[in-house]
Image (cartoon, rainbow, N blue to C red):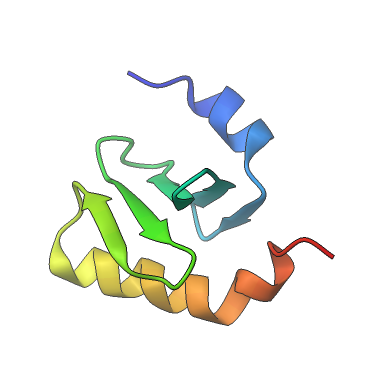
Length: 74
């Protein structure tokens, strides 16, 4: 079981219970309410790995597209 508090503290952005954290591949996103559900997205928003269902993937991708400007380096 991941350390939810540590992941949340280190996240670049949290949206509706999803912690978005930059990684070498792009972004790791963890559902803080259901930590068994996670996804890794490329910087272009493509799914690289996931344990989410199709509906949750689309929800997370929508959050990513609408908020990625807040996670980019200035």
